[in-house]
Each structure stands twice: as C-alpha cells, then as structure tokens.
Length: 484
Image 1 (tube, rainbow, N blue to C red):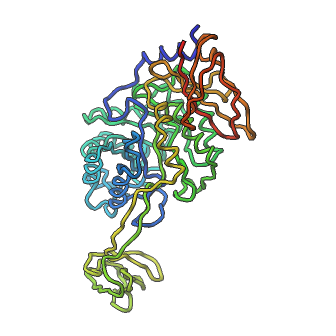
Image 2 (image 1 turned 180 degrees about the vertical axis):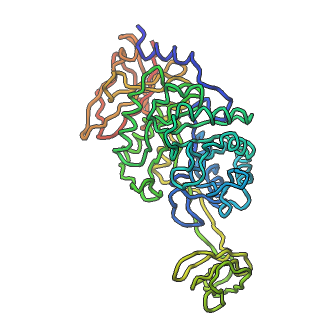
Image 3 (image 1 turned 60 degrees about the horizontal axis):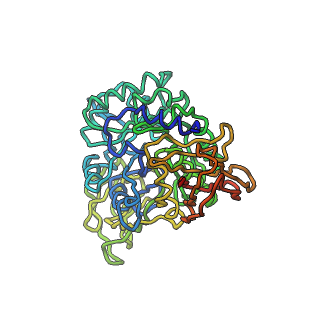
C-alpha cells in the first residue's frame, strides 16, 4: 500500500517549477548572507552592513578550507539591504553605495565568481527598501534588472516594503519578466512574507519564495516558522527550481551577530539543531547569516609614529592641525570642532568626515586581518553533511506524517530512503515511535535506521522504531532504508 506521502511525492515531482537555469537552484540553494554578519574593519558585526573590504574578506573566509562551508556545498553569497546608494543617478540608475563601494560592485562580484560562488543582491518591490531606506525597484523593473545582469548578479531577493497598496501577484511578475529579459540566468527570490500564499502562484515567476515573516534566532520565532511550513498544502510543496523559503538561518549566533530587529538570540543547542533539521527536511533554502571570521586591526607602522596633513577640507569649520585635527600615536588620527576632510595620515589617504560634536577617531592605513571562524556548535550543525543530504534532494519537502500532528515528519528521498524528523515543540521530553506502515512500507519490512546527529547506525527494525525520548525543543533526525 502506498502512503499519501509517497503518492504525492510522485505527482509533485512530475510538475516542475520554473527552471531558468539559475546557478545552484535546482536543489534548495545553500549559502550565506550579510544580514546580521558583517562589520566595518575588525569591528563587531553591525546590523545590515557591508563594504568592499568586509565583502572581500567574507568571500575569502567563505571558501576557506578552515571554515568548511564551501566544501559542505554552500555556494551562494548574498548582500542584503546594505549595498545600494541612497539616491539613484540623474538617469535613474541604481548604483552601489559610493562610499562603501567606491569601485562599484563588479570587482567584488567578479571576485566571488572567481572563487566558485554565485552572488546575490537585495531590492524591494516598493519605492524604498525595508531597513536602509535605499531606492526600491518600483517603476524601475527593467532598468534595475539590466543593472543586476550587467554586474553579473546570480540571485535577486525582492522584499515587499514601502509599496503602497500594490498587489504582489501582479508586482512580482514585473521583476520576473525583467530579469528574464536581461538574458542572464538569475534566481528570483520573492519575499512578501507568505501573506498571499506565494506557494500557490510563485511557480511561474520565481525559483523560491518566502513562506512566512522574518525569522530571528529565538525559539518563539523558529517554532512559528516550522508550524507555518507544516500548514502548506502538499500539492504546493517544494520541487526543483521552486522552493518554499523559511528565511535565513541564524544558527548559533548568540552574541556574535548583530541581532536583526533588536531581538537577541536565546536558543539552546538542541533548539539550534532543530532549526537546521526542520529547514533541511522542509527543503528550504539553507542561507546562513552568521559571522564567519574573527578580525583584528594591525598598524603597519611602529608605535609612537604619526604624521598627518590636510589634503582637502570638506567642512565649513576650519581644519587646523593641533586644534581641530591631529595624530594619535597608535596608527590613528582625530578630528574635532566640526573639522571634516581628506587627509594624508602615515602615508595613507584617509577620509575623516564624521559629523557631530566631540572628538572623532579615524584609522590611518591600519590593515584588517581576518581568520575564518565559526563556533564549534556552528561547525557541528552547519557542516553536518548527513542532514544537508536530506535537504539537497529534488523530491517534495517533508511534512508531518499525520496532518495536524507536528511531532513526526517525513520526506521521501531519491533512491527510496525516507528521512524522518522526530520534532518535539513541547516544554517537556516526549517519547516518540515512528510506524513504518505510516510511511508506506509493508508491516513486515526490515528497515535500517541511522541517527544523523549521532552519526550512528541504530540497527535493523521491523514494524516501527522507538520509543525514542526526544528532549524539549529537540529534534531527532533519522534516515530510514528498507531492506525487504
């Protein structure tokens, strides 16, 4: 007897989503986003920040053997609402922030491509973006799509802020058509937060779509996203080039991230494993936003050395050496009394243009050195290739075996194996048993069970596996293989 899960798996795979040959999109995309993960120089991450230096350093960290993300299959590198200039050109073109990307985006995009990465950018379907209040793409669909294509962009995420009262069902196709007309294979990620059930109409338009509001690193947020994924009707489950996006993973961020929306991550180790497990079995894109390097500033000059001179004054207030600007003997300079301008400091061109009263510090040619780094917990979770393999399949996303009961999820995998997640959203430990008959296998079938977090073969079983004690908010991830 074939279960409902197996029958729907066969029918859903036959219906392919919109395949525009975008890179690394046939399977759920895996990657990294700048959203809460970058800071200037060696500073702590700043919410939604990026500049040329931090991006290049993050690319180097991303692909490093020490980090392991690239080796585990992560290929997408995304900048969120941080990269665009706050004004368009007189011709209406969208351009990169002229201060943070003085050389434009093409050099860093080319650099990412040279490392084997696909490069993604963010925009919004309204007149402004969500956080940075940078220009949105409304009314500039073709113009922006052509810019993205000319820069070599591989992924465009379009948010849904500051759009007035437009209908997303008619607005998102405008950007989709413009991207396709650009002749570049670009993954289009719709982000209207699942309000209008995009899984019902996103297939002809995009390669992935957000199915819920923003996810942050709290248990409340994580549990809500998982419940929303369970509620998506089976006929709209993910398939090649058409994935329900549960939003970015904040795996193990803790105090290392910039904390989107002002909420600090407060999850336990088990809850972080649950986040990754349930995103994986739900065939969601696995796009991580977490710091991936530790950085320090190192002065190329000896201690007690400083030499500074004014090149060009940009303020109305006078810049007078010793009065409103001067040297510190640690590789930095200072300005005060409203002085702003371009200086030569220790032989380096230094822009020191901070407004406001008091004294301001500017680095003089310090070299930022970074080493790739994620925490041991992040390494355990994000590099678990057995759980990743559950995600990286062309079959429809997993779902609860029993509708309305969120405890046992299953996803049919290519080759006949079934991934099972024993998910406990309750406030106390729960014993769970998975019935093989409920998965569509005969009662007498012999099934081997592998625990994907323990990396251990649990043995051969008939009829069922369990009971298994699942701690509060934890998930036991299994891979089942039928042998007879």
